[in-house]
Image (cartoon, rainbow, N blue to C red):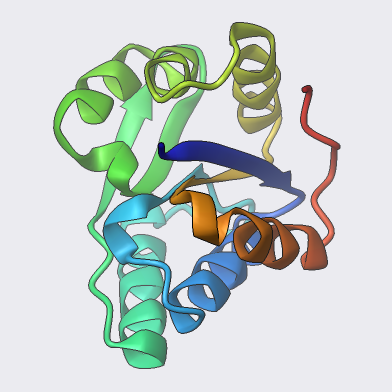
Length: 150
């Protein structure tokens, strides 16, 4: 059973680096999601292209990316599974809906949404049972800003 593991980071750049490390570790790009915004500069679309290039160069992975505006959050960059299918529709309604649909508890999803509103970036990985410890180790090594709610 796939488990969605989430962590938030102080900056978009920190989260982007985590995405690259996950890709290098062999986690399929279609199961890695990211949402956040750059604190410097206004060109989130250019930043999105940078994630795809960095992850692609690192692991031969192609991570789908997009710049969009979320209700209550504003302009963000979203990447990976958060842009696909039902998650994209839920994300259009807000971060909470997309995460709850993926199995994250509502209190945890609300905390992540509030953090993104305040400028944090969120990485969400859909991990297979055999990948959970590896994914958690990679996410935690990057010093997330808050311990997830159990």
